[in-house]
Image: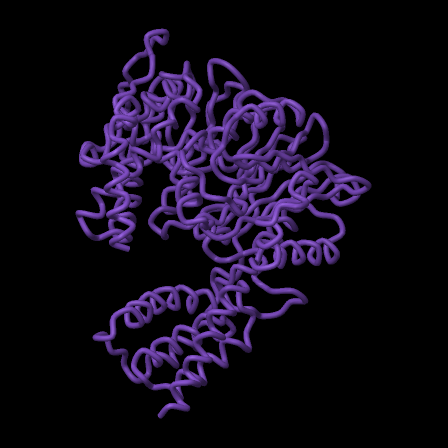
Length: 554
């Protein structure tokens, strides 16, 4: 690890002149007129400025409506969400500090990110830079030591991509699907997705549903978090939808266009699938991603598959359903070795097969049945695979789930926690008609989908306790000075008994304390469960072999 940081230090010293221009870059905002917002606080959950407003509904989802030119959009967004945005920054940067506690290494990491992001601004549209500039005026001053506010705001839009690229990992696996014609009750196009991006429970607390009416382009809805102008899940007034799923990526040498800004551009400017493909094709990305695009105007859905050096479009034939997990399906990636390996080793193919199974059981979907699919926690053939298993459609960590009825322009967004809370319905025709919100909310509450009964179960309470206990045993595994009480491990395992990880964790705890007989028992139990990935299984097998060698040597 120290060699890596030494190498980074050397690279940064040699290339510091190459990042100077990007670090001092400020977008050209002279062409835009702007009125500095004077926000009226009506109460703790309602704020307004002219026709722009922020309100919190009874399901604790924040609803933001903003309009204006690019710079004004940024100012309006920042002024209304300032408190929420600064909380989000605190959560994000405290996570980074937890990963890299050393101040010296944090300095090196900051330097590396400046170098890595040196070309990002050259790949972001000027109007989006102006919007980010306006938004960033309301960022916290306490993180100015990292980078100036505008750059920080831009870098944060690439955080998903950078984490993906630098560590060649995904923040677990998203699942999405589109069905139409014979696969829905009314024949209309219906899309569902789980956004399994997890940066901790605190990060998901303040979900933000943005309704954006830009000066140029198409008004749209986007579901994300405060401080975000990119799109991870959204629908525009034309009934075009976008959702993103990470794919297996090689590590690129420099950041380019964050994927959420590519999908934002599609949502703002595309009326149909062909226009969406044309926009995606002209942008240079730096990670591999699947973009599921649904279109009311085409009554169809496709998956646009982008990566730094390849581009494909997956269209289904002779069927009216398309599934998207975390591997590529188009002809362009047929011989991609990285993608093939990912299909064999990850949990993506398993979830894909689970979607097929669920669609066999539910021939004609409606929004309620779609919600049930997104909430499904079982394995193939209904197997109990443990709560939080990434092979499940519902991994109990989603930032949000959404359901889109494109032709009706209806969107349902899940309330906390995960996709278990009530799905709140929004009608884009009504929202973008210029009418004021009814009863202080934009929702069509009579169309809401009730919360999952699982939320009130003992199993859910046990899962929440398991998450806390899993943190405790992880600390004890990594620090031999921490001793767990006698009853801790049996209780911890009873909270999530079908999940392989509880036995693997116990095995490592005993192994580190040279209790090899106990360790062997636990590793064998882990191997009897549905283990998430091939590398995870191989890791358990490796520990079991090491344990058996130790026992033979005793």
